[in-house]
Every structure is written in C-alpha cells, then in structure tokens.
Length: 600
Image (cartoon, rainbow, N blue to C red):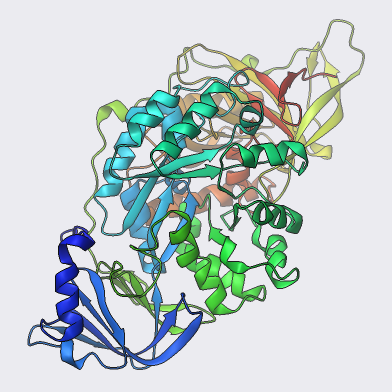
C-alpha cells in the first residue's frame, strides 16, 4: 500500500462539509463506537464516525447519510475510538534503527505522531544528517515531525563532536516542511548566561513561530531555573521529582513525563496531578529513548499510557496527556490529537480502555495495523554511503591505550573520581574510590564494583583516548562493552574490567563502522552492527531487537544486573546531565560545568 499523502485541510474542507451534510459519501465509516473525546473529557456511546480524504468529516449519533456504495464500513461493536497516540519527545536513533523501521515497530502499538530530535545523527553528520532523517520522516504513512537539534555540540568547551550547528543552520532548517521547532535546549548554562548561540537559535525559532524544546537537567529550582524559563524553552522532560513537575507547570512550561527503556520518571512526577491536584492539561507523556527490544516486546506510547493509568490517572486523562495535550503544545491541535471533524483521521480501535488493548490502528483514514501486526507495507529507506563509515580511530588500539598511570609519588593506592550509575535514571553520581597502584598503573576494584571507562575519539581519527572509572555495572571476569552510541557527541565509549578486552571491542567496532559489542574472555558474545553514522542499523527492527536481547544476556552473564544497562552505558558521555561524565576533553563535573582531574 503506497504512503497516503496528507491532504491540506483548505483543499478538502468543502468535501468534508458535503460528507457531513450527506451530499457526498465518506471513504470510511466506523459505526457503533464509544467515542473517546479528549476535548470534553468524556466517552460518548453509540457514535458513528465518517472519514473522507484522510480526515474526520462527521462524529455523531448516526452517519448513515454519509454511506455510499463504495464506503468501507467497520462495525466497532462498542469498542472505543481513541485518537492516535503522540510521542512528544523522542530520539529515533535510540531505537538503533532508521525512522522507517522505528515506524514499523511502533505503529501496531498505536503511535501515529512522533516528534523526533535527531541530535544524535547531527553530532556525527551535521545538518546533512538532520536533512537525511527529515526527508525519511516525510516519507512515512504516519506523522513524523522533526525538531531541529539545538546543541551540537551539547556543551561547547566541554566536548567536541563530529559537527557544529548554530543560529544560521537553525534558521535555515526552520524553512523545511517537516521541522516543527527547536530540539531540547540542553545547554542550560548557556541560556542562563545569554550565550549568543543559544540566544540566536531560540530567536530564530520564535521568529518562525515554532515550539522551543527544553532540557533543564539541574535540581536547582532557584534563579537559574527561572532564568532558563525566561530564555524561551517551553517544555521539559528532565524532571524526576514531583516538585520538578510542579515548578515547570507553574512557570508556564509543559511538564513532559517520560517512560523510556531506562528512564522511569512518570511515577514521582504524576503525583503533581494525583496528589497536588494540578491541571493535567499541562502535562505530556513521552518516551525520550526506547531501544528496539522495548519497542518490539513491550510497546511504545501505549506502554506509557498504561503505566500512567496504573499510577492512578483516569484513562481519559492519561490519553489526553498522549494526544491533545501534545498537539496543542506544538500548535497542531487543528491537525492531530483528537477524533473531531477536520483533523487527520489518525485513530485506534480499542477493546479495553484501562489496559489499552489496541485492535486496529488507522492513520489518514487507512488501516495500518490490526491485531498487533503491521498490515501496511513500509519500504526500506536508502541511506547514502556518505552516512556510513563514520568510525575513524586513527590507529589500531592496544591494551596500553586503556591504562591509567599513577602520579610518580603515589603510594599503594590513589583516590580517583568515579562515575556512579543510577539505575533507571539519566543522572549519575559523583563518587570517589581508593584504587590500587601496581607497577605505576592504577588498577580497578571489582569487589567494590569499580571498573574502567574510556572515551575513544572517532570523528577525526585523532587517536585521542580519555580514561576513567565507573561504578554500577557489576561486571566480573575479563570483559568489555564498546558502543559508538554515546550521547551526545557519539564518540566511542568502552566500559570494561580488562584493558585487552577493551581494545578488542573498540577495534572490532572500528572494522565494522560502528555499533555495540560485548567481549568476554576474548570472545565476541554479542554484536549489533550500526553502519548508519555508527548509530543505526539498516536491518529490520525485530532482527535488531533479537541482537539487543543477546547483548543484554551477555551483560548479565558477566554479572550486570542493571535494568537496561545498555542505555545507561550510552549516556555516560552526556555532559549536560549531572553529576559526573566523561568527554573527549576529560572528566566533567556537570554540577559546575568544568573539567576536573581524574585522580583527586
């Protein structure tokens, strides 16, 4: 089935009027449905819904006047008609697959609109990479809008990635048809300090009349927070506490509550609604980051909505937070977010509302999935060779590249800074540990769960490597995991207990052009090839999910018990989220936004 283009409302409005009046037949009529109306907050029984030209034309008690000889009729038999679900903030690259494969995975789960921030590929390929994903997004049978990445690199001065974007590039992209706004403004110190780049990008977005995404990853809700809001960002998904959600909504922002593969931030923040009684229409649900295994096995936005309902929200409230609230935030309420006349006919047939059992998924009036299976044909989208072979190491690595030399006056131990992983959250802890010194080199302490981490520069073949220590993975024996997915600069992160295995893992990714690999006792235990910018596979989502399952299994066999440890691994270089991170320039204290010594 070819992709159905979106008909402009102004071009088809007379046809919608004729269908509503009975002067013209509908393309599709859903009969005897329970209408989940997100505007009125009610469920209207015994409703008929007529669709023409890919848009809703009539929602009322009887649509028999809109039925013609060629009209497709679907008897809902009392099932619920729910607006298609929207993911307000997400990164396709975190799914390890292309936009097309991501859509293939999530459509059966009821997602019909996505707002993607491709700042991963932007940090590797710059504006050309954003354009590649933008153009692929336009080719989908569902709505995929693109937020122009705002922070490339995410923290100038603290990291250097593969590209630099600024106000000129943002202004240029604002004219592209699929750009909906500015992606998450992660450089919150830059906003607070009136950094010219941040000021210029935000101004370009406001001039275009588009939405500015936020990312305030500090727990400080004092002057800096107020200044950040005053600078222009309109939403934020980085809250983890009830008071974070309250503060954002009080300041006029939309609080985005995320449930991704490794981020579980809904439960605490939803208390702002269920306990503090704040208006739910200013809260939005999103995923941020979901890997392919989560998408294939557990779902996407349907998973988030079910989770929110399980925490005490009424089903209609949770659905509003994944439909109309999102649409209004992006100024798209006339296009998506509700089952009402004039909007795109994106909807779900649901047999049980509290558990959100989705029987069928429609987008633009066409059925795309039924019974949890995709029925539409989504042809693969070709990426050019220029988007591949982006892993450039400079030289073949050896075990000595991952050694940490102790100071000349060191005794039997040294005190080192250690990045502490926080399970199911993006922030890390800033820890210290006393580590042994042997033959002038600093060792690790597996009993205390301290192993090695290294960042290998991979964009310019400089050969630069920054070494450090990390805690929380629980690895035992000689093992290492390497990944060219390393938010946001996307150098290569290698975590391991053995320098030899770390070198083996890094060299292997250099050979194949990027991905994720796990090595144990010299053997390759798991591998996910990601040749597109070192970030995405060109294989089917279910194949990537199976490889991701094998990766998780290999990590567990080596002692790791973290939930979704791969996602935790991939964020260890994200120098805009506290507290301690690693970059190509060194160890970063994100609380102070400055480089610090590894050894105290």
